[in-house]
Image (tube, rainbow, N blue to C red; front, top):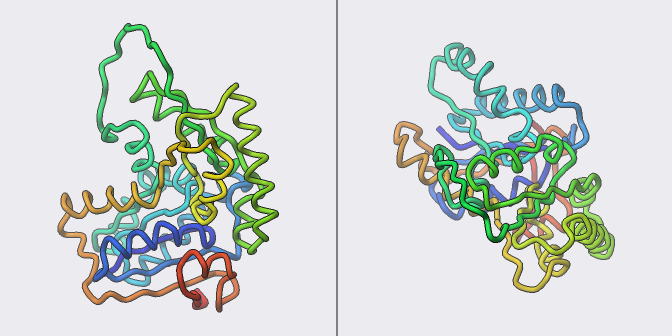
Length: 283
């Protein structure tokens, strides 16, 4: 068996890279739905169906666990798929399979609390709010998943989301650093304007954005902590395997990269991030 990693494009490679570091002997299949990228501006039902199709393809490739390395898919589709599709699909396959996302690990990292934690509601006066800025796609921002789930766990943390409609597409297509810098700077400025000051911490709520994390660090005040989804996800998956040893991730160390788009090498921005050229097979 192997681990499947799914994203609308190349952004999920940031999570995949960290997972490979954490589980060097595991077998991985990465699937990029580049024929339909980006997901951020699509209607919810389309996102659900595209995500389901990606999971089915990865299960057909022998994966028993699929990680949605896409905030939009995880925010909009994951709960629906887990509740209404996955139980019947498991019975159809006749084997154990599961789908996990990257939003839960990120919220755990942002709050310092496990997902299942139910804090007691207290009437104590909150002296100072910890403000977390989330840079994301429009669909993730519209879902308000970070605002809702963080507020359930931490009354002293306020979340402000900044939708970035074009940024994932620009990264996917290899835009120049000057173009990317201008867009990142504009979104950081817009978020600071809405908050009235800079956030205390920031979440790069689209895995594409990790590829240009240095531009966010440059635009934010020096020392602003970034909550990195790849690290949080790798930690969470390690804990998952400890709890579920029956989900064997393989021992061959194989790496496959599939795309619904055009196969071949990816753009220079991705190659620089990965440290070597990546060649995708046709899915």
